[in-house]
Image 1 (cartoon, rainbow, N blue to C red):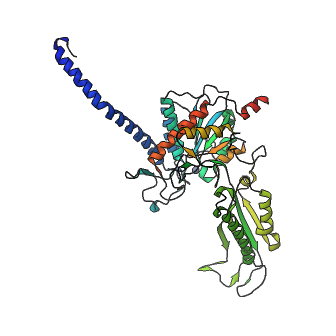
Image 2: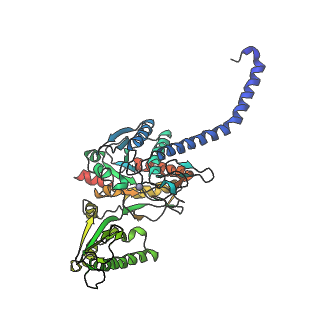
Image 3: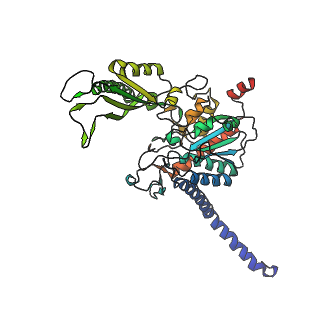
Length: 458
Ligand SMILES: [Zn+2]
């Protein structure tokens, strides 16, 4: 374009070009970066806008979104349907050494319902408040953030040219919020899972109001207890012993004393929430219905109450069962009890008979690596905890696999299942760097783990 005959002119033009370049370079870089993080945030918002609230989650819409992300990252994708209409997505980033055990990054796609009118911003709009940077949405903490942070971290690792030594799997699973029976429970029991040769699972944790990330090595087991008292019915005016109401109230008093003793342990500051047995009454059922309410001059022959009990993996199960039998629902007071979720209650130990906890010290290489990777990314871990409620991690721990609960959200109030659940965009972006560091450390770990060497011995 620049002819030799217009030498001076072309030189002048060149100088102009260089000056233009010098001027535009710095701003150009900043714009590229800003665009980069804004597209990262947009993808997060896109996922949050898919309404996957129980009881009617839009699972296929979420599956489409995740499939498109998998495609953009050239990850192998399998859509498993252990139960019809409940797709479970399995993504694979193949490692260079398939003989080494793999890394599993798990997240659930469903969220709990939201009471829309109690939110300041609609829970499925993923509104970004420009003044604070908070992104409001159901699932912003629990746990769509984590699922897509895994993907964004992989995107960055791929861009840096990193190739994993160990295979990295990602699972996007349905139904965690309703017990995981049609999701991870089925997966953990499948040949597909056995063939994945998983060595370590990362799953959800909780936000942390301090600068330290919370991390979980076990969880409490839910015991859903229903106690029922029976007694002779009688006139509302008569005082006599052994009425159903009286029998039930004696139990409730006893349960309340136990609850207070456990709560005192937390209040003393020496115990974390996950380390004590919690008991909360969730229903009371008694009385004889009448067209206007209840019959007032009749003492009913039956009364029952339900309790949500959460038992730490280190608790003495036998002692608690004894307490239920002798103090909370004794046959001597005409009482019976039922423990719902019996299967969950029965599995406080893994298939080798060990308590369902993942060791959180240097004996566990995955623990060491996690701690170092978080530090390397300028993050700090809080003291490891027992998760106060149940998550899908238990199904992996039941198989004897190490599973660590970790959602990198520091300086964030715990709002899972609450109104106005949010995550700050900067905290979200920081979490991606944290996962980048963890996934790199895990996928590069070249020493056979204890499990791998013992498998070889077998
Ligand atoms: Zn969750």
